[in-house]
Length: 323
Image (cartoon, rainbow, N blue to C red; front, top):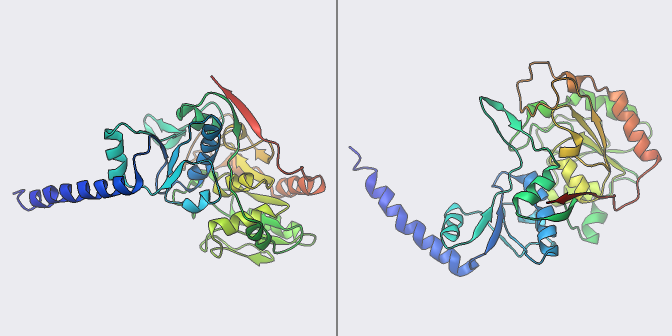
């Protein structure tokens, strides 16, 4: 009964072995490599922190990524290679170290929650990559002068984002609600120019420049690099803002602590009830009280404080010491 499947399975093995041999001849054997996964947009960006610290220690990593544009102009990775499962399996058999620096784990019996680390996620990633000593808790993205200049739509622009549900792996428990972001925009619009970033499917906000679905990753980074402040949720764009030294107002609620998922250079808006930090992805049994209790007025006030006293750039970087 299995005869129809067996020949296909067997015939695929030589093809895969041949492809591995060709890739090995073309790419060589990396001794140390980082891999997060093909959907890991924000996590690949966070890996730039590991790459910087490893390079400083004279032990650089090769980066396996589906997003090479995040690393353009970055001298920290030894090499950039595409993700290929057979190649990864093969180089491991040949003695290569391939590290997957995952910083959260499963909660037994509750698939809707993440077990959160007890230190900043970048510190956790660096530790999982075998690094010791002091590390800087920030990601990096390198823009050319031309790219940066092209990001400016208005002098003193504010970048905003309405939702993270367009991410490859959405987390409904991080959501604050597009209607609240729209209220923030209406409050700020009389005095400031607003630019919306995000995917084409994100709910529109009342802004001066709607760039949803119209920017590459690097173009979005350039918009952030020349913005006075970014207003959004904990997620990729917050990490991208930090990578280009744009201060941020981040609606975090109580899913996770700011000291684990954000940066002290940001204004992190939290509400931490007894159930916080929960690490939930979705299915909050408390009607998202930690998020909904944060008002648009609070976000506007935080943004105005940043705009009134802009921090010097580059932003001050947090640090951790790994044993």
